[in-house]
Length: 259
Length: 326
Image 1 (cartoon, rainbow over the protein chains, first blue to last red):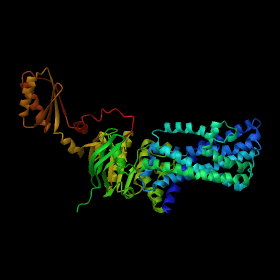
Image 2 (cartoon, helix red, strand yellow):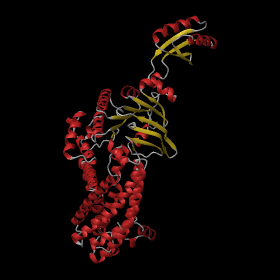
Image 3 (cartoon, each protein chain N blue to C red):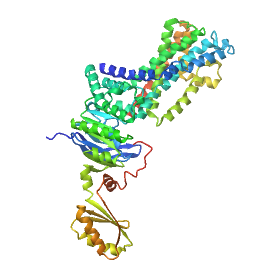
Image 4 (spheres, each protein chain N blue to C red):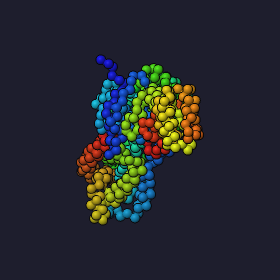
């Protein structure tokens, strides 16, 4: 067990070093493009959006939850990229020829992606704060947002890693990634509430786990505990099922790829 | 009871989709030798290597490393081997020393021992001065040396090197060969894959020629060359009738040092023992046969490429560089 912790930490340390050596990449990782959604999209629709429909004080505070979860989405789906490169250039093979536990590589990746995701969520909330969005549920609420975000991130990262181990080339990986992420956002309650959508989109969004996650994060920011708690409970149920499914698929893909 | 060979491979097979990457491959590697898997890209040598380093499971057959099965006892095998990957498998953002520190953690080497071993390995491969620069700025030769240092870190009994000098300049190649020979002197068994004939010829004690997933020949480069049946003398004749050629062949077969005669385009390929006597005698004989005008005569010692041609029907040298790695 101690040995496994040593392996996971050593590998996680590698991911951190890699990121810290790429100053540009680090800057852009922390200042995700998602911030632009919040700043530009948020301000753009600040007056155009109908707060009766939104059920929120203003569009910025409505959008904050959506952007938090979009950040989790993008991070999670990109979580397998470094492993994809490791697979392609042979570094993964080199790791797999050492007597480490096969799971250490995967665990290090989860640990790293979750840590980065957590930091990004805090950056998003800080930017939202600058525009006057103050989470109603306070520090405890922010902690719950972080937990829900990471729980969602685990499943997404598992999908991403499964794809990294399965695809034939990284071109395929990025095509699928690009194809997945926008519909996931539009077919969720990230930008507008479900009630404001056309019926068919509403139906699709209902089955998008992202909708459930956003609907739990949003009341934590704009309403308060009494409205948030039932939503958080629902989100946890959805996320446990979602993660179980993703981890199962991910484990299968990993086994097939590295034995 | 005899000690098991360092590596024992029997009837190994690996099928990708419907393609046989490796077919019924058997070989054994002795303790302390440098063994080469020689073949063109896509021949199956890298697939074989991957099975031996436990990163790929065979479809059929077995392989053991120091008596341990590479599938059932993969973890034990991983503790006995070192693997030197191709140079692309370097993390460009880590320094040389950080690579070694990472692997020291993964092998759970005691901290103090690891630090001193890393220092001595960096000196061994002449990377001490560049150890704290990120690998992005390393030359091909330096990356390869870092690779070797990583492979040696866990004190392996057997070291596997995948194309150790692929794409290196001459000086770096000789340098790497020298390192490999030194390792052999320390008693480490070494297995390399290569598609360079001279590397197989000069570095390896024994080689297996692999083509289309199968072993075509195994032996020392010297024995393999000798097995071709002596030195070759190629006669080129102008306007020889089939009848005259027959006459000449019969006459040559009577000479004591001639071992075999095969027809080739516009002439004959004669295998002989010792060219000193054979050359003048063959010329003389040719001149006595009516209708045979000698146009040219070539003498060569068999090269490893001839061995390759004899066993695979094609030349390794003519192989166009394949775009896909095998």
